[in-house]
Amino acid sequence: SARLTCTCRYVANRSSADCRGVASRLVWLSEDPSGRAIAARVPLLASERATLKEGAGCQLGAWKE
Image (tube, rainbow, N blue to C red; front, side, top):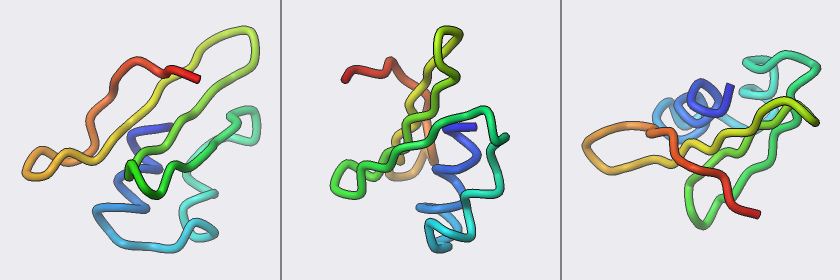
């Protein structure tokens, strides 16, 4: 969900509202506009963060709060 939402938001340049439907209702999303990143988590199960890397698209990486 993080990578798909990141791609929607930062590669396709769509609004946050347009990209919210990419993730399931069970997934909590948070956006870091200055870092051009999206964090996604399912409480107690998993979390991931996708960051836009120039020339490489949205890449998954460790999520740090």
